[in-house]
Amino acid sequence: MTVARSAAHRRASREKTRPSVFWVLGAVVVPLVGLFAKVRIEGGENLPEEGPYVLAPNHNSEFDPLIVAVAVWRLGRAPRFMAKESLFRVPVLGAALRATGMVPVARSASASSAKQTLDTSAQLVDHGRGVIVYPEGTLTRDPELWPMRGKTGAARLALAGDIPLIPLAQWGVQEIMPRYGKPRFPRRSRIVVRIGEPLDLSEYPGAQTPPAGLVAATTQLMNRIAQLLGDLRGQQPPAERWDPAAHQQKETGRFES
Image 1 (tube, helix red, strand yellow):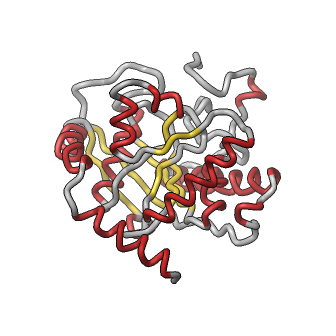
Image 2: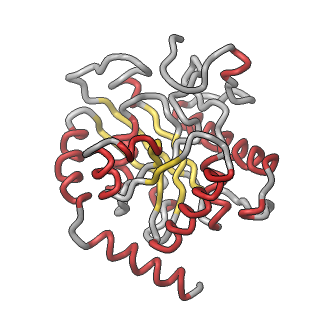
């Protein structure tokens, strides 16, 4: 292990024990979520206790980021998410996002966004932080709530810094809040969060991975998330991921199923 990576691990360890804004959020959010959800975590040993990681969950409810955040917090890590770059320019909200170490992401694919990915990856390594990235970019369009085709951001971020890319599947949140539906409160549902082993990305040349390689790595990631979800549901996932473009669906924003 390099000296830089060892220093990053020490910083991550201190982050878990020293007071921070996450302690305040945890004191409020964890009991609140507990009113609606009985969360069981499986595969928690696959989330590193220290050091950087990219955690990639499936996304089938507007409520599931809270579930993922609680699971990560219970495993001893600060739950930081990728957030739209524009949100960081909103008064008060932007300051809160920066204070909690959330990570801005540009929507457009350009040279500047590619540089942002490299900078973000370097910062994760330097500070020993993890980040949660929804590879689908929005709630799944699959009518059966299976993971759909992913975007390459999570794989690109992991490969740029040689950071573990970890798949996560969660199931049950849709009983609390259906996709683009209204909350079903009061309701306390059983939710299972399963964290898989980090993907083997050794065949890809890191930050120099070409677009075709990023697509292949993303397909590998989405297939693994689908397998984890299939295990939770006791069902076989579709052989191919849902492609919104092939069904004349927009890939961003709300939609009607």
